[in-house]
Length: 110
Image (cartoon, rainbow, N blue to C red; front, side, top):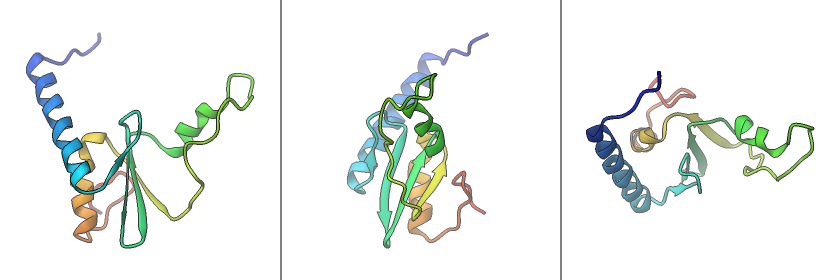
């Protein structure tokens, strides 16, 4: 059985995404073309918040025959701190980073 969001839930989500877009614009946070990943820098460190890992994203570089069909969307910079978290958590994670709070790989306070 598929879950279908109520009209109120869809409206709340749409409003939340508008607020996230405004927050990102005010705080110089880049949003990927799909809206699933966010990128920002703070104190010489680059951060990525996404609902999927870089490895999962790069799996799409190859077709079923193992032939490369596109380049990676990511540079292989090991200095990027990656959080795998839902896109609605970007504001919370960004504020925690700015406050110096330690987070685990899921963007949860450790």
